[in-house]
Amino acid sequence: MSGAGLLVAVVGPSGVGKDTLLAALAQARPDIVVARRIITRPADAGGEDHFAVSDALFDAQLAMGRYAFHWGAHGLHYAIPASIDADLSAGKVVVFNGSRKALAGIRATYPRLLVLMITAPAAVLAARLRTRGRETAREIAARLKRAELAAPEGAHVIVNDTTPQAAVAQMIAAITRAMECA
Image (cartoon, rainbow, N blue to C red):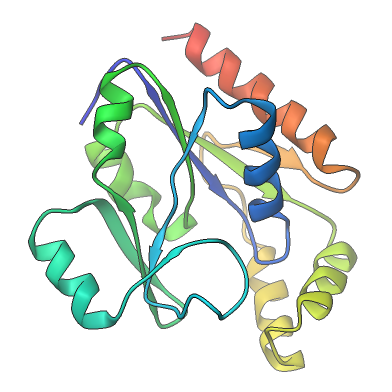
């Protein structure tokens, strides 16, 4: 799918503040569509605001073509609704919380994909992960190890180590540059 709009994947390790930044971006730029993920995780599990579905419903919706794309991570299934295609065709910017591992497959369908890699120092990540209280010490250590992975090729790196507003300003600048290059 390609249209006049721009699809933006926000990726980065757990605890880097992706959900906080997406909420701040939506507030700063209401013209940008922040796609809400469909996840096979209970709605009350904490974390981002998402559409919670069972594995069976996820599979049924996948078979009906309701997802623009999907991926698996951490024993869960994630998807972005196919409704983003109408937004992209209308020339809108659509931003979603994605996975580094899923980018190649997404880019095959959406070649005009901007990747924003959110980073923060390891000490900041560790503190955020401990504060949210969803992972054990062993799980936090594993997430910090994964955080050391290099940014995907062509990604714009956004450092989120001060205020959300500073990181959102970097995000908006990268999106603006990408739209101007269209």
